[in-house]
Image (cartoon, rainbow, N blue to C red; front, side):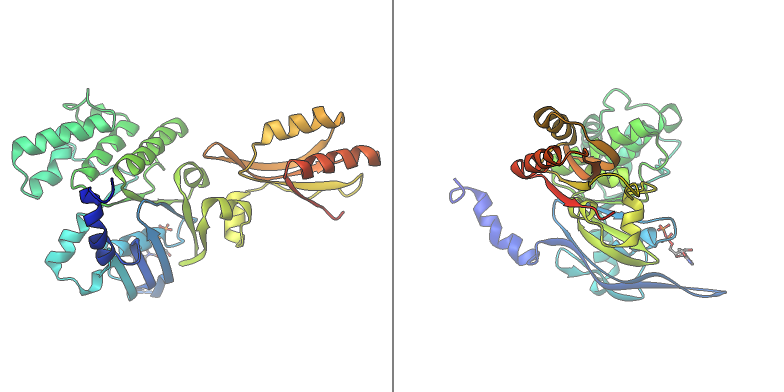
Length: 352
Ligand code: ADP
């Protein structure tokens, strides 16, 4: 089928356009702000590659440089050094006109929604289409479709003040999609929302990523946001990317102190100073937590003492670790370790 379809003929074009397969590539990007009290190095020597279809998280505490980095991505802020490459084109080499055009492929949503208060939901979504010269009737049809997509088909004529925070962000998402962007930049887009609304907005973003193929970049200080939708993550601290990788790898084995602090805030996995043998069981997404422990207890006909646990549910699978204190009797200990080995569940002895 591939050979007969137009899809086949698009391949050479795709390869010619973005030979690397990355939508965005940052090469040694730095941004220094000159202020009265001196130079502020907000972003320092950041190199990142974001693949088409990624939901890429950039996480860090306040002041880490996330917003500056995201503004460098679309050249709202010109980096002091380094290159930003979008679909194979270096943004620094584009004319103003080309840059404006390229920016249409990178929409943005914000914590504060930034809707126009005097315009209805429908007219807010029409706005970028008006600017790009889309005929009115066409713009309205498209805006209606997008508002349906985000679940607001019934609220076309509502003004922002009549909508909840979550609904306002849905309008902002519809508006961001109006220019058919390849990339959607979300700058703390759920930080003003309650946990339930946050979950529903993140689910919508994931759906947009999967159904429309839009690459999404999520700037956040919250690990739960990364957990819910990102496949890759970069951890920022002091203007630098201190760690980057697949979310599950970073969760399972964080390499940097910043990542550890973000992932395991305040959970002490230090075993009790005395008592029988303690093991650390690692959940790497192959198994889920509850059946493992329940079955272990049932099959081994013994109990274990859970000293500490930090597991995360990522896309329905368990990641994390748990400290188990084994029973006193050696044969029971053996049954437990045999059970874990048989079921390919990773564990290690913890020195006491
Ligand atoms: P984050 O988004 O992670 O909170 P920012 O990118 O906003 O971090 O800020 C990174 C650093 O750069 C901070 O020290 C901040 O004070 C500084 N900074 C950000 N914008 C400016 C600016 N326009 N002028 C001077 N300093 C700035």
